[in-house]
Image 1 (tube, chains in turn red, yellow):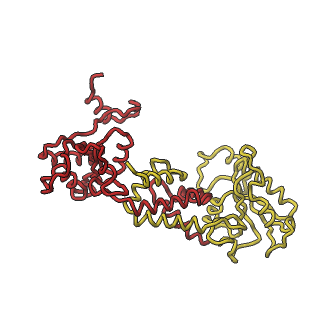
Image 2 (spheres, helix red, strand yellow; image 1 turned 45 degrees about the vertical axis):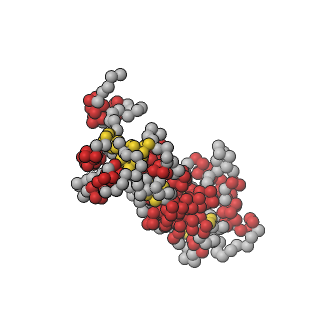
Image 3 (cartoon, one colour; image 1 turned 30 degrees about the vertical axis):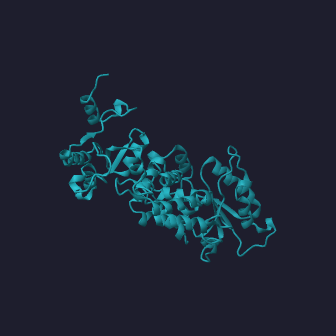
Length: 206
Length: 206
């Protein structure tokens, strides 16, 4: 039985996170029911995305232009940079619509266990954007006066945040973090102890 | 923020069964990390599959050739046809390696609720393959002498099996069904009552 093409498609799809061989097979069977309306557009969009979307050389966001649409946008507040671990975190903050500054994708966290040091991350790029003097480069446009560290609240994420805050200490820029506490819509009963005690310690007048 | 291309890709991926918007986003972010090794090959395989894979005009299997590789294979037993609901069921039986005859994809089940009658399924095609006289066509090659009804053990599946068995009664062909009982590796404790009582009624000498 020469299911070569289909088998290869299933194997490729099964490598996506969230899909195993079984669900990849199901996806292929459903797509084959309407190749023109789903399969071909998907093929074309994948190809175009792979060929045109690149990381922004300033902030690391993924976009078809470089610098990306956010870095180019004259409406964005260029005095604030929000440092995130991954592009997905940047997208999450964009979806919230609550932030109008620039971003910097660090590209992960420092990790002693996985052997990831500062050189494996794009931390130097962030320092250079905040404090151009350190790199000997002339400041481009207005000066950054706040860096928001929106890194994960894991041990590695917080280690990375500490490290970046230390590196930025000399620059005189304000370094802030996201507030920690009870998520909106969160049931206290289901919250972990760490979040609850953080929220208690950081309690504010009602 | 003009994430046009990426947003469109996420929307298309999210239409696959098993993927929602969230996992589609995660899949896109992972693919973007290595566009050359996963994204472009996936695009190319999708395109080729959509353009070359078609349902077999004899049995309904999906393949790049018509008739499909199974219908063309001279090694397969042409006296037995296994009727299945969907192409996925055919693949499942092929993976078992336990069957060497031909197939017929019925394309679903009869369903009074969903308004699917015999004309919406490929039942006439099965009758014609078994009993060419009924269609006035000359028998091509050796005669079929068994039809295995490997349809789902749902109410609709069994209704469809009954209907097909009735239609085939006059042809003199043997009509059989898959055995029902305890699945191999199945824990009795987790089995539903229906399967257990079927397995009890159909008990055999040890």
